[in-house]
Length: 511
Image (cartoon, rainbow, N blue to C red):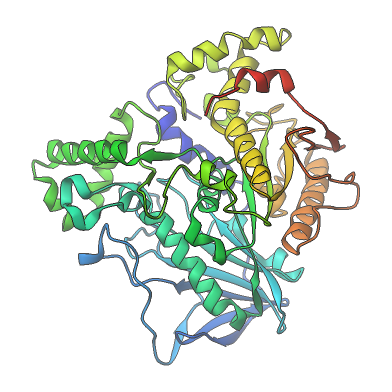
């Protein structure tokens, strides 16, 4: 699935998306009729089938093209007549994918709504993809199942890579200050659209849950630390996230200058030409830039002193999400997806998300003492999982709880018993379970399908404002720093207090 020349930086987003893509094809369209909804911006013509109304490619911003490239998003203009909302919009700019159209004109969302007036709770989903890849229209994100259970689902696109996460001020001027947060601003404008328009679809703007997986979870966690975002949502779901992927402003500017240099080296043109250059050569430069830059995820948000006044984790601990509820967790073996089944043969096996290799090695040296029965393969995957996902998620849970919020913690231990990653609870395995789209071509498909029903029901209960619960699950207690009660999700799920306590101590004061 990977080769020594295909580094984890490149593999990170693509492998997770590939895992989602093979889960299911696009659903066959059943007999449907048109349905029209009147929003504050104009009328939308969507499709209705089997009790679900679907509206695709709904604009929540003016297209960020031409003079608006690299600038904060602008609210959309109203339209007259009925706008066709039966087709997905283009995907945000990223590496070429056969059969998928990419465009800078990408700020659209999709809505799955139950028939009826509601008011129904709302689930806004932020897709993953390493901040450089991904789509709001992945087949696994089809919200029909949630909608049939009385939940309005909204999947949101946002600008990726340099178009959404590059501080352009050092190379384009003061007008572009803080542009590394443009993707966050895209999401805020989408949430503003939800507050203004979701009632037209039967949604309740007072019951909005935001959530995502991987980069989508990290963006969810960062949104928790944005003071001005708090009126726009009421609950959060974080699957394999963390709030650590933001730069200090000074380093975001270093990254910006670095990309300007990379653009000049690849094109022979000055950085100012980035304002008007075709998008594809910019993505080509981005691909090489990501490979050459010494830190992983160089394209990320920044603490700009305005939108993000300080580190999100500090704002959360100070009470920014006080009174809100958070469902958060990770998969036991996240990094198995990236390191491969035999990471000792992968030269990029220790390519990290947050720490330098030296800082990581100091912690990793202690792992054989904590887990003396693990193989080197298991130790490396375990430690890399902690560095990128588990510890950052623990930090968010602790901060949210300290700040006066209610937290429910989980860990997915379920593993498939066939395939390349058999035996591992790998990154992205949870997504199909949450959306009730389990893998069918695995040896333990029946067990996976049963767990998917259970997890989907627990997430649905949480979105409705209840405690996460489902038939067959034990009672799910709230998390606190003392007991750290965690639901271990598996064929037979159970609650554990203080899981991996000795390992957690290795990371005291880190991240």
